[in-house]
Length: 236
Image (cartoon, rainbow, N blue to C red; front, side, top):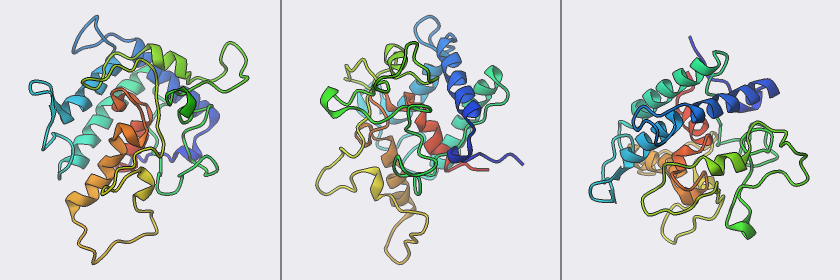
C-alpha cells in the first residue's frame, strides 16, 4: 500500500527533490499547446478549465471536479497523473500532504509556507508579492525561488493581468460568507446534527482554491501548494 507522507516529516533532501521535480516539469514542453507553455502549465490549465467555461467566460455552475460528489475522485486522478510526471523526473519524489487542520501557522510543524520549502505569504506593502528571504545570499540558496516562479507564469485566470507570484493569506473577508481557510473545521471538530450536507462540506474544502484565500494568483492551481492541500484528501 502506498501512503502519503505528512509535510512535517519530510527531510531537507526530500523537500529539495520535490521542488526540483516541479521545476523540471516547468522546463518541459506542453502536450496541450507545444511551444506555448510548459508541461506543468498543462495541469494548471486542466484545473482552470474544470472551473471556468472559456466559451462563455464564466465560472461553471457545476464544474467537472468541484462542488459535487466527483470532487474526490477527480482530484485523486489529477494528483495521480501529476505525480507520475514528477516521478519520471525523480523516482524518489511523492506528493506529500499538508494537514491544514493542524499546521495552520509558521509555528506549527508541517506548515509548508517557509522560505526553505514553498515560500511565504505575500508582502502586503508590495501588492501581496511573494518575496525572497530578506538578506539571503546570492545565488538564492533555496530550491523554491519566488522570483523564478513569477517569470514562469503562462496560464492566467480569465481577466487577470498579474505577472508575479502572489499570496493573500487571511484577506478574503466578505460579509455573509464563510470567508478564509481558518474557518474550515479542525480534526477535533465533529459537526453533527447541524444540517451540514456533503455539498456544503466540500464547498468549504473548495474554499482553499479561492485566489483570495491566498494560495496564488493568477491561476491559483499553478501554485505548488495546491497539490499538498488536495493530497490531504488522498492520504492513502
